Figure (cartoon, rainbow, N blue to C red):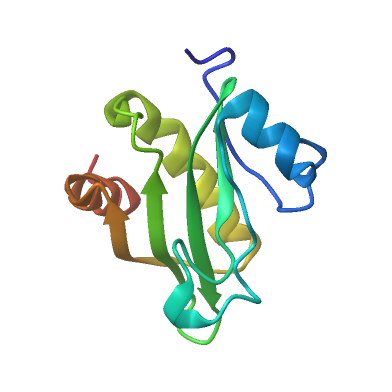
Length: 131
């Protein structure tokens, strides 16, 4: 369950994330920064960041700020296989993505891939402000 109901996009160097073995043992979350992994072997993306929702690590997001067209690209959003509470999670996560985009001076959003696939359309609609 969610403790504070807030979603947080964490740095790969966050104190919670940096101890990979502990993270795997306590959260069942196997995390690796894939920037140095050959593209064909990446599972989640170049710079996929862990997503904390309350007291659970629920997934990861690989995003990129394309500054010229002011577009924040969600290259890949992947939820942990056992996570299913997408509807409750989405509003707070969309808020975080909007903050992240604004910080990077982006005004538009592009969602490329999500897993599961059915999350893509609600995410696009929420980011477009039609939620």
